[in-house]
Figure 1 (cartoon, protein in one colour):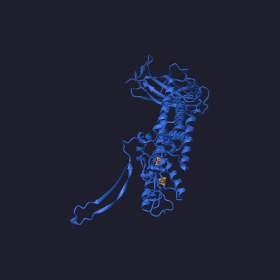
Figure 2 (cartoon, protein in one colour):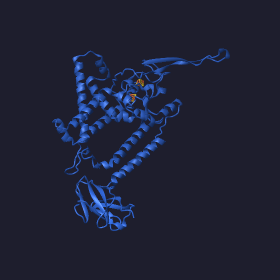
Figure 3 (spheres, protein in one colour):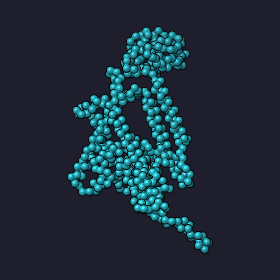
Figure 4 (cartoon, rainbow, N blue to C red):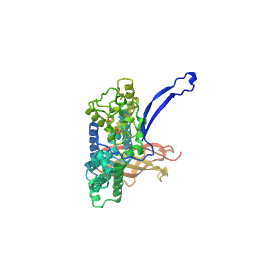
Amino acid sequence: MLERAATVDAAKPRDAAAGIERVEVAAVNLPARRSQYQKHEKVYPKLAHGTFRRIKWLALSGMLAIYYAAPWLRWDRGPGFPDQAILVDFPARRFYFFFIEIWPQQVYLLTGLLIVAALVLFLITSLAGRVWCGYACPQTVWTDLFIAVERLIEGDRAARIRLDQGALTAVKVAKKAAKHATWIAIAIATGGAWVFYFADAPTLARELAAIEAPTVAYLFVGVFAAATYLLGGFAREQICTYMCPWPRIQAALQDEHSLIVTYRTDRGEPRGPLRKGESWEGRGHCIDCNNCVAVCPAGIDIRDGHQLQCISCALCIDACNAVMSKIGLPRGLIAYDTLENEVRRAHAEPARYRWLRPRTVLYAGLIATVGVAMLAALLLQSDLDLTVERDRNPVYVLLSDGTIRNGYTLKAINKTYATRTLTLALDGPPGARVAIVGGESREPATFTVEPDKLRSIRVYVSAPAGVLTRDATPIRFTASDAAGAATVASAVQGPKR
Ligand code: SF4
Ligand code: SF4
């Protein structure tokens, strides 16, 4: 940490004889700067108490509960089908989310979901800064959990520092062993919960316990457990500062109207320790108690200004508010505020908040547009899909009776949980007929599709030679039963005339 003080000559006496006056500018203390290469100093966050800490506890409990419990929720889809509410079924190439079932052909729905999630994150960031980082990011949530365990076993900040700096005693070894054992148990539970999303959770849990699960399951549990242990126990704030690209991207999403955690310099400075009986006259409200620094999980001092390391967790607001209440001053020396308001205060103008700005309106509009399009795609989707691929080689076959035959591969997807017997009809040129190769019946052409399955069938379309030319004549296939129908367009071709 370097302390710099400077006395600056604003205008050098280039020519005293010319009468240029020498101006002295008072010395300033510049904030301490970190070297990019300095050794990492371990951060020992102190427990904060207050509104934002309570919100963080709630967010932590809610998100962990959802993560660990979600694979155990059941959803009845009928006999023979997975009854897990949320399941990524790779062997069946299906994603189940309660009543929604997404096939590989509907991957656009997942793409749309990711686009909406990204846009929501953009909107939240432009309105309220890094709240995702401060409250909901998995790195924040698991780091918070690991620190809570550390605090429970080793004590709060001062006790942990003393323990780390103290001699190796039996108590120290016991506390460290208990802490790491708990961390490892959490890490294994985290890795274990992850694999439950990809297979029937109760079955896989039994197999894992009996050492009968597939090797890949143990591999993934191990990889995720190791990542959780290292990232939550050791890397912590360094992930946010050095590895995560989001702090860099968010700079482009924020502007001077976005909420960030700010220290009110106009009110806090000049800072200094509060002596008994001292008047507030001529001094700022910051009593330099460093409580805001002690609770910071990023180990920074918000009084140095907005910094990349700050995850907007607002724990420094809680810490400072507690101090302000204790010394009888208004809370809010550190608060969520905008850069614009900092400038306005400097000019004695009232604070203002502009929620409606071109970028927030744009993000909200895009979220609504993509969201409505996805909802419509989801609600209007059919439980029967039909696709067709026309044979290219040969394009047509001239039969002995003089008719022209074209071949096709039709794929029918039955998204219901019942077998469907479908009748195939053709809408094409006069005299054209459709036949299924190996179909259940020829007139009418029918075929069955198993529940929740895709069936591929070969189809011939024959037509009198006189009605077909080399030019493609449009046709339409329709597969239908009493429950519904699906139609797909193609073409039929004959020889050059
Ligand atoms: S400076 Fe305040 S808001 Fe930023 S990370 Fe530290 S405690 Fe959280
Ligand atoms: S907690 Fe508040 S009073 Fe204490 S050092 Fe931080 S800003 Fe100053």
